[in-house]
Length: 87
Image 1: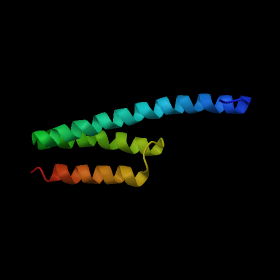
Image 2: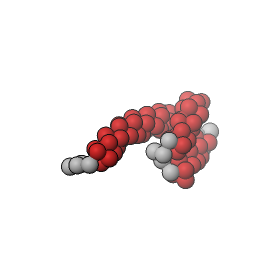
Image 3: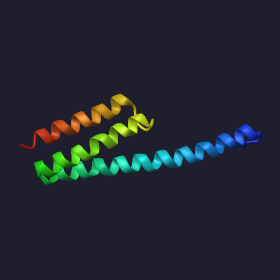
Image 4: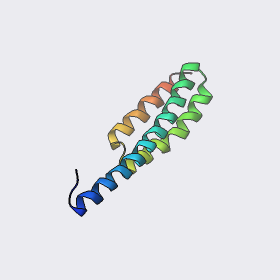
């Protein structure tokens, strides 16, 4: 349990950050799921559109500290190659 005022403030800040990051991660996963569903259905146009919508969202996760830069780049790259293979 936090005893000092600084530790109490930190605990509060951590809870707030956790909630924000959780929401952001969830939002990114939703975009990823839309791309996955479009790929599974075999619709190249829908998959490409979903990827175009997901890409900035994933990269925003990097700038906000939710994902590491290389992780996000890897995810985008793998999705892009799967969308490209749909032709």
